[in-house]
Image (tube, rainbow, N blue to C red; front, side, top):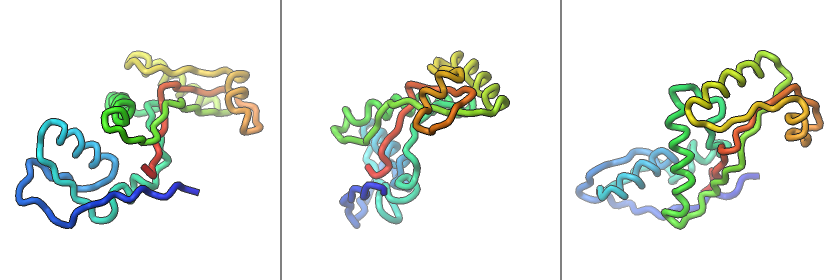
Length: 163
């Protein structure tokens, strides 16, 4: 069962002027509005429903670099740094934790793809580890299965979508 969403108090009145108008009160819109305001801009955030209650409230909460496309990786890495700093900057608990991300598989082709990704990720400064069968089976013991291998990224994490 999901945690209930925190209700965000809003005003129905729009200011007469703004330096920036952000449309959408999901995670992207919230972060955009926050960082624009930190730079001294007068920001208006417009949301058709409840802030944080649309798509952003229904995701799984993963904040990851693991197996990202090369074009996404710099942004994913930067977003993890932003998540890490956000709670201390705002004194708000987002539920963000760097708990790592584990993928397990018995498929040789999938494992080979993860090896290629790991080699690429290292050049981008991402920490990721290939796991042999014993390591994968130990980390995945809760599944009750034996695994050929896996990949683990200790710097990935999760945030609570209900916050």
